Image (cartoon, rainbow, N blue to C red):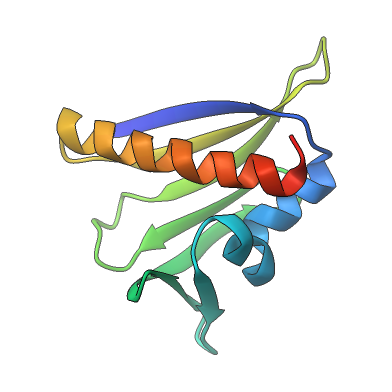
Length: 124
């Protein structure tokens, strides 16, 4: 099942997008280490275990979408930057997939922890 999480952030779009779309930026908060192979496969490493993903879509300053290689073809995780038209507040919208409510709860807790790391890095 697909779900979305929204995190208000105090950051410029440029700084936030840099943390979402580059190897060095993702290594700061999302994973312990990130590498990209010549064929465009991203390897994310956490505490010695790794998972591979393919970049499937990105638009500068707006979004970046990956698909885990071991997931269903129609599942992905996406970082989308949203700006409130009235207040100009910046939010990060995360779209992800989970098998069931328990997996969703576990994943949400993990996302919350990762976003706290991101907030610390960008000073939000």
